[in-house]
Length: 395
Ligand code: PLP
Image (cartoon, rainbow, N blue to C red; front, side, top):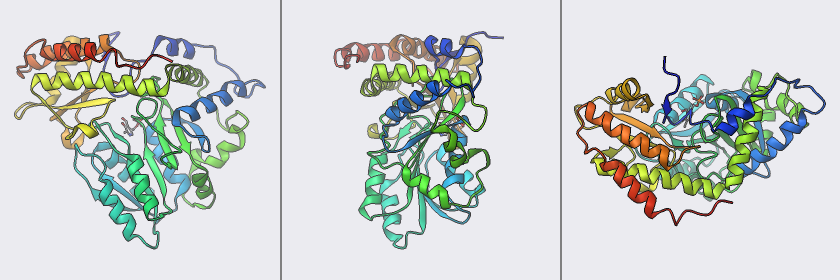
């Protein structure tokens, strides 16, 4: 049994030692008179990271998927119409969940490797003059294809026709790592989990909820069970939970927020771009293609790489794991066997990525994809050296 795997999946991500130590605390009484001293500042720090002043940040035990559930359950009623697009594994899973919630789903067929088709959203929203669409859903960072979409442009399309729908955004692999502006982009539901940009174990669903969404939740009729916003908020505003919270994870999250805010959000985004760009330069030097079709939409948290025709990307994954103790991520559904992914979000740096790239070069050769050993590493090294001065100073 391997004790340590070199983890380069796009969630879970590397957990910094400071976060691990923050989690390693004695269990405590979540009804103790001073428990709110942990929860209330945490809510404030999360607001800064989601960039919301007017919204609430709700925490549930769960993963990112439960955030989709919570959003649909609280803010919509059976039969409500939602507009969304299919352009990757996670946008598709959200569509499937909408159907489970008995929503009427209008799906725009997008392309894998492309971003959310904003122009088509705009067309459908403009045609919906009676505002039958109650929510517009978009996956900000499609982790399966390594593509980031323009949420601000989607908001602009909604505003252009004064559309009243709620804007629900999957920020599971973006928030905490990529630029995300809940208030400026008019996001009503922002969904995240703890195990990606927040560098934590899985186990917390972190949800940004606008005042408009909270109002919608008062009249919506979908059953919400455990995820009831109102039930949570009654106690949560005072720093408590109506159920037993994962106290140790809350300590870890407080530490990860501290680290993100100390580095500064803009610096985090710049670092994520720089690290990702080094990986992209390596892929180019190998002569391989990205799944993402255009530089403007390349994700800075995950890079999805196409293996050449005739190869199976699962062989890359197995060899990496079995022979080198390296966890890369698989291609999912439509791109299964065609893509492997390198996650580079959260607590990563040049040294770690150069190691992952060097090992990936060995793996590719082992499975018969003959890239020149060292070519990707050199391309990334060159880029990291030349872009070093340009990195913003730490806050
Ligand atoms: N949305 C996106 C974009 C994701 O990348 C993932 C997981 O990788 C999910 C949703 C589902 O989140 P979870 O696995 O935490 O439930």
